Image (tube, rainbow over all chains, first blue to last red; front, side, top):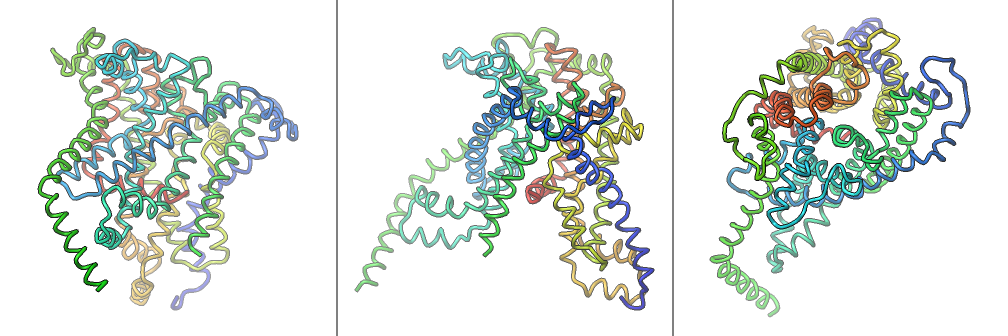
Amino acid sequence: MVGMTRKKTFFWLCIFLLPNLLGFLTFIGAPIVSSLIISFTDWDLLGEMQFTGFENYIRLAQDPDFWVSFRNTIFFILGYIPLVLIFGLACALLLNKQMKFRAFFRATFFLPVITSWVAVSLVWKWLYNPEYGLINYALSIVGIDGPQWLSDPNTAMIGIILASAWKDIGFVMVLFLGGLQNISPSFYEAASIDGAGKARKLWNITIPLLAPTTFFVTIISLINSFQVFDQVMIMTGGGPGGSTEVMVQNIYNHAFRYFEMGYASAMSWVLFLVIFLFTWIQMKVQDRGVN
Amino acid sequence: MAMENSSKALVYQNTKSKKSKKRRPTINKILFYLLLIGGASIMLIPFLWMVSTSLKPDGATMVLPPEFVPNEPTTQNYESVTQQFPMMRFLWNSIVVAVLTTIGQMVFSSMAAYAFARMQFRGRDKLFLLYLATMMVPTQVTMIPQFILIKQFGWLDSYPGLIIPTMFAVFGTFLMRQAMLGIPRELEEAAFMDGANHFQVFYRVCLPLIKPMLAALGIFTFMQSWNNFLWPLIVISNQELATLPLGLSLLQGRWATDWGLMMAGVVISVLPILIVYLFAQKYFIQGMTMSGMKE
């Protein structure tokens, strides 16, 4: 910089960086460090903080409730991920063509994405109403006696999965649309000359060339769905009979209902480890993709 | 010879596809639009059902077969939900929180991004790496110490408690830095030559060039803040300070079976963000797509 002294640069640096840095250290940096420390204590917000070593983590490994919430979260993921991937891709393929009202359709598919989880959950709770809900009414038209949905332990999680997929399909669609736009039309032209039909093109060109996007979308969806909370809290509160209790809800309950800050923090670090595992896999694969 | 054959095959292909194109496209097209309209209906029906329910008088919600269009539409539910419940107060709280969070996030992250992208200082890259590393940590890890911190500051049940901790999301700094890295050096050098200082370069040169990205970040932050449920749930216990998502969950606790009333509340909470969406659709989609980038 022409004629600018060190002092001056330092002054400007303080102005630009300091507000953000202070906020970052206070509300992100310090909490991360203290959360790790708290996870090795038995702190209950009121009493003295006592270090208990790995006790919280050992308790966690033996806590049946934790494993139930872990299993429920995995069940959610196993239902949710294939649904958003398949339907997200299908919507992207439909909308990738030139057509009338394309902007309208895209906006429509994206509409649930901008709506809050709480709003969506309440609307779906009403849709799932066993007696007067729209879904069971629709089922009754085709002669099916609809289930009790959210009040039946066997179907409650399925209900949450379907509503969640409905909300996020538009998001996945937009990511896939981005991926589709990166596929050069020359591949399709070449395939047409070779006489490939639409199904062949989809199977041999689109899906393989979309693989990086698909991978990316899967990882993001995995990371997001391990943190599933709002919809469960509103639609079932974890019930009936703990059949929809998920990991974050378990953390929330232990922290803000039972005030077991140490134990809840330990749980949150286990959640971090699971999420980190997938982030790490993604970084490894991406590095290989670049080289 | 081989070439001749292949060109023959090509001609054959072309005629074949031309022939079948006359008939099939119409069927394909009909099928295509059917799928499209079917999909769009699945996306829209819950919203229409929400509005329809909210306009039904007492008792008309629990009717079989359901009335898709209310026979006697009424605004009764909207009146009761706003009279019996501080719905308008929630709306106001949501507006205050979302607007201030968005402004804070935009200002702080674009300024820090300027320092990270356009200034030289010792430890810059290491510090930014530290920022990035924290993006991998989910909010569930930080929320407990954040709650304790807010409690110690005396910010439980207050606007600062709702707003300030959420203004420093690292994603914003990351995004703005990414945008500012793309600005050619010559532009700012010219400005410095003319005697401009860092603030003028930031404000007059850099910000105008990253406006679309800044807008996408703003919209994204606004939406996140508007829809946030977990943080208000933790920080707020005084009903008067609840934002809309928290307010709706309280509403559910009180009138769990009055669906007309509940849906009226939901409509009130969805409408503002919907209006913003209609005007800034492009930025919503851009913001959400970029949010994927951070992982």
